[in-house]
Length: 555
Ligand code: AMP
Image (tube, rainbow, N blue to C red):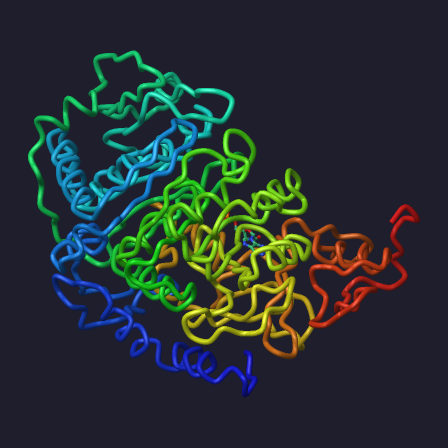
């Protein structure tokens, strides 16, 4: 556990979250509008399965939309839809979102969708996707968004696990060089599935017209005659959504997200991890099909009353080579969140960031990265060219929000390239050896979180408590096993070295991708992603690889 006197506010918050989790999360729950305030904060009676806010009741859509309108912010932008691939830019206010969401909830109701029913959403990056998600939340239905790039086999596996009553789709998604017709993919997936959804709602886009069959319902026609539907009250522990992990082999794991813990975690993290406030413009350059899209394109910014930029296309290359900078300048973006790979692509096209000169990016306060290790080159390139804090954060589909980050809303900390900084309050992070004991500072092991996990993390896998326990809670009893290996340094900074199932066992030595990167960097004299602060070449990161293991001369 980090314990440096310079981290006063963080240390206080972190300790409090672990010493008095119920007090900590009761206070955080004050940011949410409840129909019935929770009197109990944590239910441990079925441990290792935990439930947060078990007797609370709320509606997530009300928290993301209605309450901002009721508070007089209806004319504030909720969504800025920026779509160079269609030549469109639209501003959706909270008023617009309330109208569309209430009406689409009426469409779902008319099709017989009730609280607890599942709805698969297979859609591109357009505002109607957000509308469909929130409309499900509004009537207590459980959405399962499937990334629009997935092929019929993957979609079919998810249909057979979630058993949706209906599917919501669009006629097409648009990639920079081609139009991808979604409807034939949906039809093929249903053909392959044992479970047959009753209806498919299709949004016809101008770029492609989907052929319609008996099962299909036209979005616009259904919307035109749908009533506006009020939100229903659901239990905090009722599922809001299922999101399948990205694995394409075997039966996908359906990560369940509840309503109450999720809403609290979204509001808390947007403010305290990302330092964002109501009305700020935030751009998460990802896709709604991924967890980053669920948490930080849709739910966290909207629950917090901020403005979220929804970007359709890849903000790299044609038709908009300076897209990252243009979007920041056009919409006054305060913070960007993306994956390092996106910026590597930008850097490849424009190594000196010459395109940046054409845009006023002075609104930008921070740049966040997640999804993979933030390599020092990318870190330094963004820091050098944009001159704002560049923040790595580490988390997973399972947790739904950061496990380790630099807490911008609590206490900004010195950045060490290669580390996502410190454990986030709520996560009792340990580095364990094979015998479930804590390793020494600087030693590598399994990154595990002592149970209970904080609100907003997965309570279980869809319909499969045993698989949840077997997959995550068994390797180290009493802990959630992240599946990532790493270490914590003397300042309490966490270093994530890669998936433990990517570890190569050679003659009894366990080699992770991160430790191999360290050896390569050490050998060639470069700085590596695990260099301690101020390190110069050659890398002096703690090495867990026997010195007798020498890399090939080519390095
Ligand atoms: P996913 O659940 O598909 O979002 O993938 C989560 C996994 O991506 C984590 O378990 C890590 O292996 C990796 N990951 C995500 N963010 C980071 C990060 N900031 N640094 C290192 N690895 C990361």
